[in-house]
Length: 106
Image (cartoon, rainbow, N blue to C red):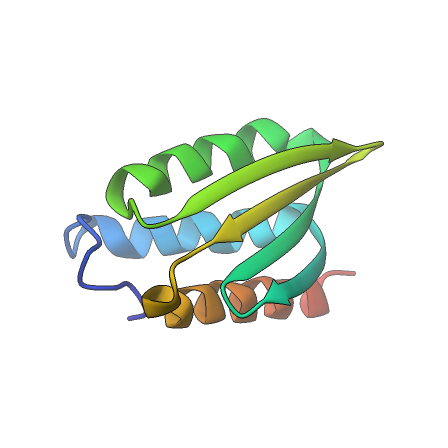
């Protein structure tokens, strides 16, 4: 699993959280950009803004090292995720999952 030791989710909750990210990525992500090694931008369909914000808030509760920021751009939402250098592998995993979901979307 790609969750860091700092994550406070237990082994029962973790697979559900991963599935929530995967579902949101599959439904909502329109572009993925790695801005820096520790910074990722997902372009999300605006209709999924509330779901993305809710997931980010819940993720901040268990992995406090994340910084999430949202900026609206017309009918899209830029969801930026930043982590400290020690958590780059977590961001790598999220970027890979988001990119894979984007590649599979019609």
